[in-house]
Length: 266
Ligand code: HEC
Image 1 (tube, rainbow, N blue to C red):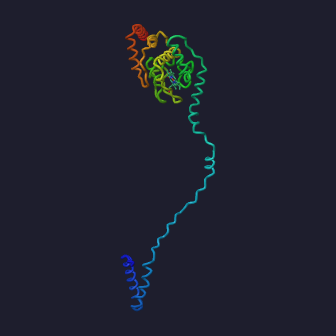
Image 2 (image 1 turned 180 degrees about the vertical axis):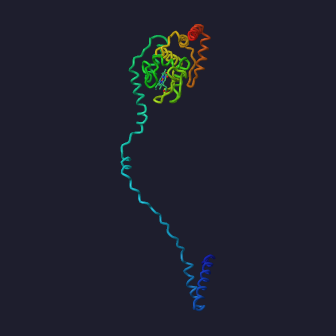
Image 3 (image 1 turned 90 degrees about the vertical axis):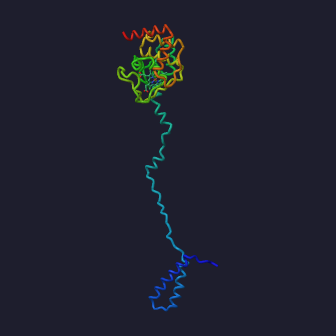
């Protein structure tokens, strides 16, 4: 036996009450109205609830503009061209730089520094220090930037700062140096300390036009072979402390150093 749910019974009862109410307004007899009630209530129970169907609206694809199609089909510059184009001027300078003639005599740490320079620095700075990717070093320029050996050494070990950063002597004749954006100099901490000192001495003599006499204590330092490791981030102060340690232990170097101090103050 099928049980009729309560809510359906309730609904039929209401429908019937409505119809009987409407029938009582007519001239129909009680029995007639009962019959109407019975037949009218039937569909109320079975009639399914009809909900409006949801119609999804599908928009037709928009036509693609001809210039968009043209842009999509056009041949593009390969991605790797960007770094290549960026470094082209640097390479151009590197090749140009190697064409100049090196200038150094052939003995001692200064000459040894020349070999280090040719191998590691001439590509950017020019074989004669005339400049290229970096500033001109020769005709005394490099010594104007770094009046002391220690900050010169620290610069070569650490490499250049980001573009826009001032470096070297802030009272530099001709204005303080500012790192350029056309190329950043790598740090050379991977070189031996002796090579760093040699190349600095070489630059100061051949480009900076400093006399070897003036650099005697540093030349002795290079010849002693008693150099600490210079790692990335080294400060001129720390290099100076090592140098002073050496000078205090070495009478010849001390004498040479005192002479340069006297010369500087006179
Ligand atoms: C990849 C190129 C490149 C190489 C290689 C390079 N440098 Fe430089 N160097 C520069 C640039 C560029 C500057 C200027 C600073 C800047 O613009 O960032 C500079 C600046 C300098 C300066 C300061 C000069 C001044 O008066 O302002 C010195 C000293 C120097 N380099 C020494 C060296 C030494 C020594 C080596 C080799 C051991 C070397 N550089 C290798 C690019 C290079």
